[in-house]
Image (cartoon, rainbow, N blue to C red):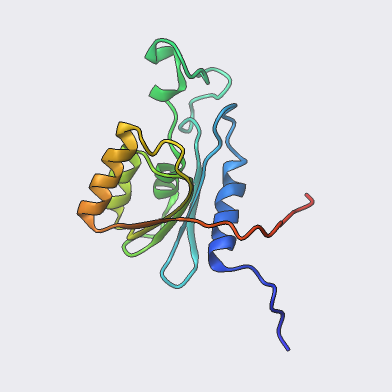
Length: 159
């Protein structure tokens, strides 16, 4: 008889997204993303950080101040990193798991890449113009999105 307590696809892929986010060196916000094919194969992953060649020891991690003194002008979000990291061709029809609801800039890339579904964990910026613009574009483009509902199951790894 087979095991009955195995994790669901949503638990599996959200777990991988969160694990990817643990690679981020951002001292405030760690976000991870995992792109999955229609037949549940991992296509790509990403996390928020600076572009290749831009040292995380040199570029700023600050959240406030002049734009050039903050991370916002330089950091690549996890969703965009996952899209850019993919080397296999089209992402049309894929599903994106991400630990934070995508901003408007990432929504543009998600739509253009052909990703059809987004599963997100946190929506802590739901009332911001960026999230509202994101929802408006995703709705217009027919991209389905829903919030991941934690099962309460504890999963741990000893590394």
